[in-house]
Image (tube, rainbow, N blue to C red; front, top):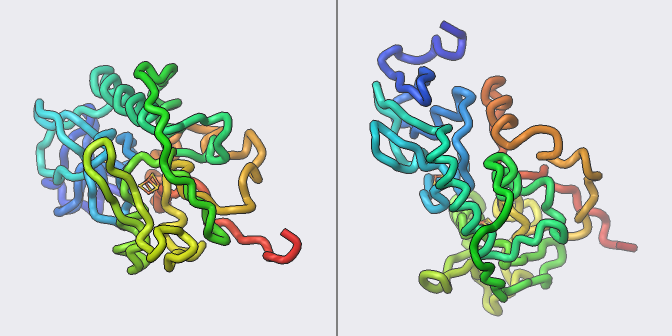
Amino acid sequence: MSDYNSGFDSANMFSIDGRRIPFKPGQTILQAALEAGVYIPHLCHHPDLKPHGSCKLCTVTVNGRNGSACTAKALPGLEVENDTPALNDRRRVLLQMLFVEGDHFCPGCEKSGNCQLQALAYDLEMVAPHFRHFFPKRTVDASHPDIWLDLNRCIMCELCVRASRDIDGKNVFMLAGRGADSQVVVNSPTGLLKDSALTADDAAAQICPVGAILHKRIGYSVPIGQRQFDDATIGHQVEYLARRHIPIKPVAVDAPKMPEKEGV
Ligand code: SF4
Ligand code: FES
């Protein structure tokens, strides 16, 4: 048994696609899988935040029934299917729905190459959006000196909402509306980002997996070929980090350094 497995009680094992996965009591299937170097697609999971279960990309089959790996607890003897044609077909459909529901025109988005939605679509070989585009007209808020917000690219993962509330303690972002009309809003007297407590180094300003919350003055600064997902697929990167016990950063780009304001 490897060093990695030796820290686990041998009773605390389950399987994913036939591979034995150790887990610590209380861990979810997704947490145990990532620690063991098995990639389960996901968009709304963050290791520092409570599970949310909204994107459903992490849907796996557990003992014959489908469920979210980010909310289902790992239990001894579970038989989990993850990387199967049927599950990946459904994940592709979920991705296609996210692409048409928002305005994900990658050629004009500075997050391209560093975007988890785009990376996952490449991983799962999504070649066309398939559904009719919604062409939403949501707020673009460029009022903040360091951050801008294009909610047309929001996938409603609520990572910013949870990070602002649970990590930053600021409640800058909230969800408003119902059903197809729900969207992220800024919790400030004017509804504008400049009048909120958000600062560029807040977790909420770093955590967006897509191009909805962006830092100003650094767009397109990474050459093509050197962007996060240019070399290896998102799944391979997560598995590589997990095998080396390097914390998996769901944030696509390192916290950027803000240039001096003068002369910018
Ligand atoms: S703005 Fe980004 S982090 Fe916030 S809900 Fe939308 S996609 Fe998620
Ligand atoms: S990561 Fe499980 S539902 Fe989004």
